[in-house]
Amino acid sequence: MSQQRDHWSSNAGLVLAATGSAIGLGNLWKFPFITWENNGGAFVLVYLICIAAVGLPIMLAELLIGRRSQKSAVGALKEAVTSKWPGGRKLGALVGGWGVLAGFILLSYYTVIAGWSLYYFTQTVGWTLGGYPADMSAGDLFNSQALNTGLQLLLSLGFSLGTIAVVYFGVSKGIERIARIFLPILFGILLLMLVSALGMSGAGEALNHIFRPNFAELERGAILEALGHSFFTLSLGMGAMITYGSYISRKHSVVKASGAIVALDTLIALVATVVMFSVIFSVAGMRDEVGGSTVGMLFISLPQLFYSEVPFGVVLGPLFYVLVALAALTSTISLLEVVSAYLIDERRLTRHKATISAGAAIFAFTTLAVLSIPGLLGVEGGGLLSTMSVPFFGGGKVGWFANADHFVSNWMLPTGGFFITLAAGWFMTREATRGELEDGTQPRWFHYGAWRFFIRFVAPIAVAAIIIAVVFGVDFS
Ligand code: PFF
Image 1 (cartoon, rainbow, N blue to C red):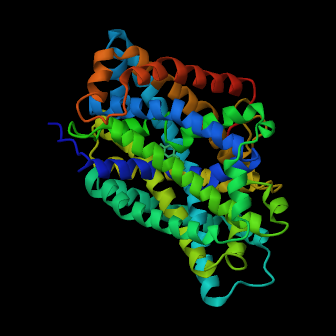
Image 2: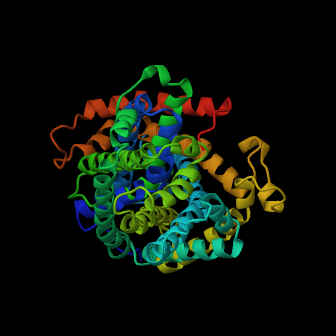
Image 3: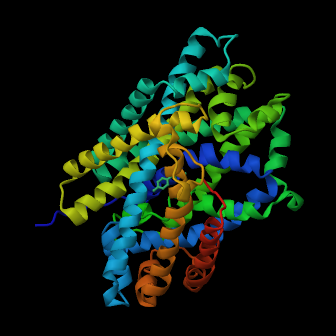
């Protein structure tokens, strides 16, 4: 007998859980950095357009595919494809499986970076209580923790166990409950940080840099980078939102939820960027130091600034790393849920068995990511795993970590996303998609014809452009 499917208890529960999936390291770690690299203003505007023209339509598509079938990625895509083309089961299953695999791989290395936030949380608590050590090099501290394999395994194991524990309790009692508690805390911490950052001397310049477009600074590759990032940040292209959509009951609106999730994710990315840039612009010489890497901004430059520049930094420092950890956790939960839901729906495992076995299998690959950190940091002679190179995928990327990130961000999410646009726009009938989106629960601003146009033409063409760019060697990881 099949078990009764668990559902979100309310629209707010769905929005918080899905927003929790969307808000993560992509918002706090990747977005500020790529905005920095692409000189702000014009890039941010292009990003907003990509989110509205491609991200939002695909978010609607994924949630509606999930809600209609009440099945996770594989089953849902099978149904979507066969609604017009009865022979398309295999193709649907293949694309769903591709998404499950993407979730598996992404979680295996995402956990490692999430673990760094736990480390910096404990460090900042220590500095708040005992003072920031005057003679310490922030770069050396970062490297010594990252290259300490035992510590890295411990941190990522802690994070994996936390993730497994939540998913183990299911949709309403685990995932939704945690999102209801953590997301308001996350918003609160970020608001405090924003208030503090806006009081700093560099705030004006930061706002200018982020919100005043200068198209002369925009490079062609930036458009594709913005588009690629909109997939990652909204958790699209791998069935996470299909899976979350499959727990939406008939009473709740896919359209309202999509609008709220996309708006909140974008808002948080922008606020995080304002906070970080305000701090950076307030310190002479910091601009040149920050340039090097994503890791540099979040884990090397910022920690020390909390103790020298940021108003109330002694309190905000530890809170900031709690924020990063919470944001990462609500994302890792959704990644594990994609894999677990597949095992539950398609392989008939119980939730408890599915969660534990998926979590354990993924952790085996997390150890590969940990062992390949030396290669990621450019340390010579870091052992076999840190020098593993897959020329086709990465062309010179070293280690599981870098190759996995490259493969997921460049190949898996865009190809998965491309197919999802086809499934919703071309394989499903007009009546089927309309029935999900215009079911009386939709808000007044929604226009079905506009969505259909975007999902049939604009989104697939834009995503195809990413794929073509990747084939010709552009790198979005
Ligand atoms: N959206 C997450 C972030 O911005 O960090 C990453 C992510 C989570 C991607 C879950 C995909 C996913 F299914």
